[in-house]
Length: 196
Image (cartoon, rainbow, N blue to C red; front, side, top):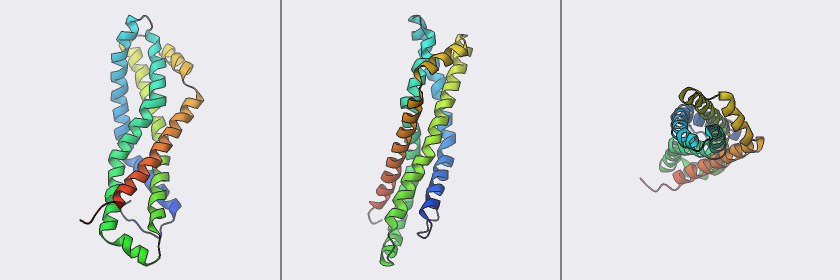
C-alpha cells in the first residue's frame, strides 16, 4: 500500500489491499475476540443458571457472535487500523500533486484507488470474521466447560440449534458489505483532504 503505482493492475491492487488488511487486523481482532468471549460467557452464565437454563448460553452466543458482533467488531478494527492508513496514503498522493499529474497524463486514478480498496477490504474481512466467530465460540465452549463444569457437547448442541448456513452466509455478506463501505469511505476521506 505504501508504493502506489498507477500502472499496477487492479487485480494486483485488490490482492495487495486484501493481504495488507489481513496482516494489520488479524492479531488484534482475535485477541479482542478471545477476551470478549471469555468475559461474556463468565458474565452470562450466572443469570442463565438462575433461570434454570445454563445450557442456553450456547444458543445466545451462537447467534450473537455469528449474526451481529463479529462482523461489526472486525470492520470497526479494520476501519480504525487500515482505513486511517488508507486515508492518509490517498491524502498524501493528493497533497503531493501525484493525482493532478496523473490527470494531466490522461490517467484516471479514481478507479485504481477505489476498486482495490473496496474489493480488497471486503475480501480480507470475510475470512477474518469467520475466524473471529469460531475463536469466540471455542473460547466460550471452553469457558462453559471449565468455569461451570457443564458439558461442551451441550454447548455445541445449543449452538447448532440456532446457527444455520444462512447465518454464516449473512455474516459473510455483512463483512463484505462493511468492507466495501470501509474501503470506499477511507479512500474518499483521503480524497477530500484539503491543502496542507
